[in-house]
Length: 584
Image 1 (cartoon, helix red, strand yellow):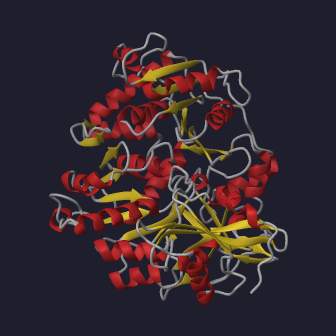
Image 2: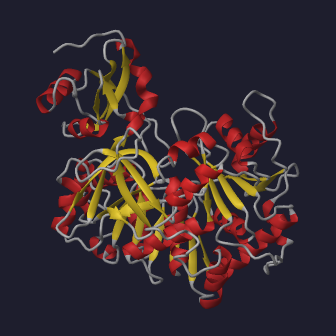
């Protein structure tokens, strides 16, 4: 695609992509491309299982490295036949399925990029992404064919994507209206007919940020970004080729893609792909498939705790029928990031299961993870960093990037220990750029680091290691009369209240202070907690200014596909109190 960044911004981006003055061109990985890596694995370990897939009905399929590589070659040949060339973008409207994974890798084999769509998004947003990404082909699961047709060809305002040359049906029964994936695939050779040498600099992934306002921004990642982050993740956690990961997160997002698809491939391990998370099957599949590590978001920790409570109430194991602690002796830890992890939830899970949470942090713009808690901490020290500072620590920077805290005003001043500011990152896993967004590129790389937009701080341990903490989104900070409060601080107090299942601090518009503090609360089933009780409890623990003035009770919480709470979507619920002046 013919998009370039202005020279001044490009120079700043390249600085942000350096690791201690080492440019990305000085590689940290030994592979020439994803194609080189996959071909090597298929040659070295042809009979080793790489991918195990469970569909929504629990049907299991597995692919060895050789089988997977042959399937990828077939789809790559199909892409070439459809006119897809190196540098093109290919979109998917799909879910977790081995076909989806194979399509991804086929694109990477020929140097094309994938633009995966989140089926939970509205049609207008998907249409915008298809247009903005300039995708040429759309692979759509059969369940979404009607949506795909409407998104691509509708003349309604906000819809339409004339750049999509063809919609390919994946799965289901063959429909003469659309080219059928399986039929097309049967005609393709399992030997790749493509002589062009792909590169680590080829664009590989175009994912769009789930911002709450404005048009979504397309994050462009290269093959090198993906492999170097997989290297950083695997080396930090000691993940090796004899280990197995499991995916329960959506693979239209970098977490599912990088942690549980690319990282196992990088080390020569294997992965178990689930259609979606299921409390009923979670521990059973970990036991059956001898899984060592699973990547989750905080919402799934909550689900696991609730499932365990229900099992115990029925006199069963906390893991479900037929699964004991001995069956999980091989299991190492859970990776947790993406959403906001509360201290109370982390403590509840670790106390209940005695399994460590390897808390971490990263963004699509930095490929995936940029930091984790160290794996060599003893249990007491681990819990110290998870529980003793009001927020669970997101850990220390991995080897492929650096991290720092800068003044949140964006003036480029770097801050010291225990000073709150903006979390900034630079290193080899920093994205290529935002696609066709010169404004966002200029602001994000303003002082030669990637600016996350997240507020945080760091502390040092006795070894001089920097342990980082995230305290909230800078744009989500509650600005009450010029005094800013982190919603995370308030939410930790809300979660201490017996009967509160979820408590979110919401900044709502107020004529007197600009913004006021509200609380959106979901109660545990059967709990009876009043607004007055919640407000009084908060005022005992916090100042009047910081405490919620209004409580709105509800049952549903808007979340992104990766489990992040979307607080800004709840602001309208507090509009009746816009003109209210709250007094002590």
